[in-house]
Picture 1 (tube, one colour):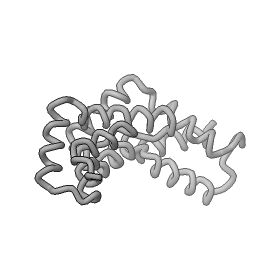
Picture 2 (spheres, rainbow, N blue to C red; picture 1 turned 60 degrees about the vertical axis):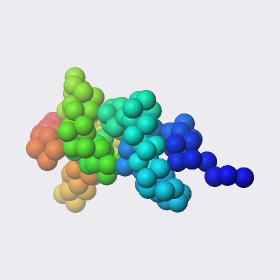
Picture 3 (cartoon, helix red, strand yellow; picture 1 turned 180 degrees about the horizontal axis):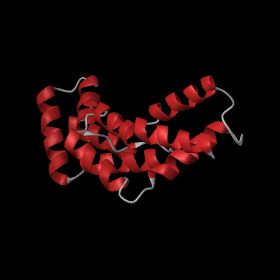
Length: 153
């Protein structure tokens, strides 16, 4: 039985999950397709709209924000790791975060971390909470403001 062409293999990959151009190229090359066939397949997929980094970026950013509660910085970093161009990632994150109240997002993340406790018990716990919020992709200034509000309330 003949191996599927790079184009058909790419269609099968994309039927399961939206992938960036870089991810698709990497997976096809990992499957030992000829690099020229891979590039031809990618060009055709881009032409037909089956591959679209802007769509992938918007969908990923939406999920990361609404389901995982991640901040702008982490989402942008993850999009860059997927091979999405900086401009495309920035535009997608801007669109998704358009009318989102990031202070409320940080407040929800804090409440989730505190698990119902009304306050942070100690300095080390405050430091862990601060680091956790930074890892989620919130800016240091926004995190500091939210934690100061928590301490002063």
